[in-house]
Image 1 (tube, helix red, strand yellow):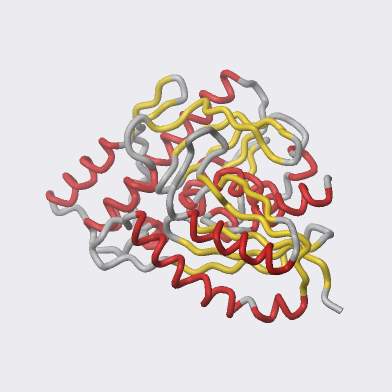
Image 2 (cartoon, helix red, strand yellow; image 1 turned 90 degrees about the vertical axis):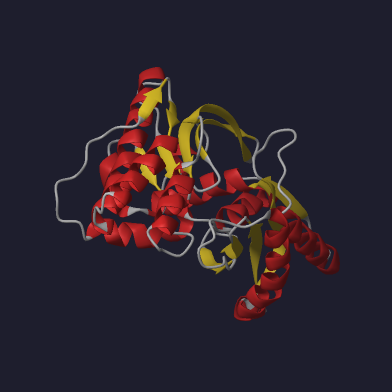
Length: 315
């Protein structure tokens, strides 16, 4: 007899994801398939993302066959929109919603919709071990990726979260800056992991140049310009990579200090693909700060599976 479980589906702009968690809250599968981006390109159009998710989903479900043979979903959860706010919409999530609703009808089980952002927050809580401490209290959450650089004040809302933006970027996102510089250096998009590898190979002194942060909000567009200027002057790729990541790290440190100034001692959770970087984690580590594990920091469906479990079991 198959064991009961909860299935999560997420179709973000760059990754198709499936995840299974048990009734007891164990993540037993966290499967991902990236969307291909052409060499030299810095992203995907939404229409292309929808098409590629449509191609990816059957492949990903085929790879999940062993889990379907062992586990029986009691409910399906899906990322249906970027944020939990009126008007939040991205076409790429339509592919996941259509698949989730079709499966739910065919299996006679509920289909629950959540925001992609809240999925990130839940995945961070689960993988960092902070669930017991933070699920029923107010905390701050950084969501730092190619599509988002925001600081959120998170409050419990039933078995989900209610988020208020209290900081973020005023121009480009941290992940955008990293990817734009990475592509200019000849790296393949998305560039985070490769840029980190270059930065770790840099043997010079760490950079301390800080970004512009005021009242919890930052500007990052200047980072791209400075990095490209370094490239034009013949600076080594390793040094440029280190400069970019330390610049982002110092910026996030100042934003963290701003949060703690407004909300003393508030716990802080960091999630999003950019936060997979070991350099940033080392710079930001401190008391009351929690980081998603790399596999649960970048885009994933595990947080959606766990939100589905909480809502279905009412826990």
